[in-house]
Image (cartoon, rainbow, N blue to C red; front, side, top):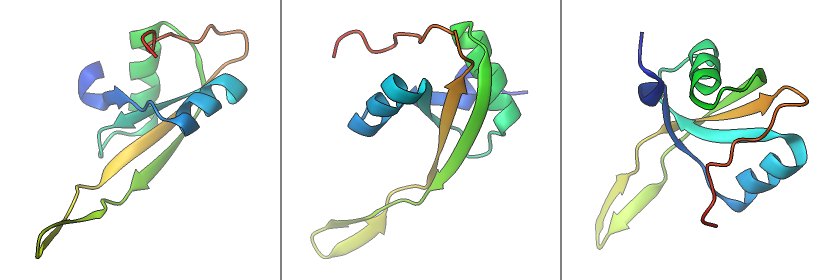
Length: 97
């Protein structure tokens, strides 16, 4: 069984994710590519001491990148939208913005 930090790589801090956090009570994380919804739920609940309602995951394809005449691709990664149960307090992992 992977540890919490092997499942959750980092929180995604973008305009879209901050908007979703404020309006829908949903947190957005980059997670391990082989992580299941159950593992993500357990990791978020133990890390932030909150109750999770639903989880949606999305596989994101890596973009093509160029260095001069050489092309390559960024790696594929997985995104998880974690909705908290109503009444749960949103964890503040972004205090410096």
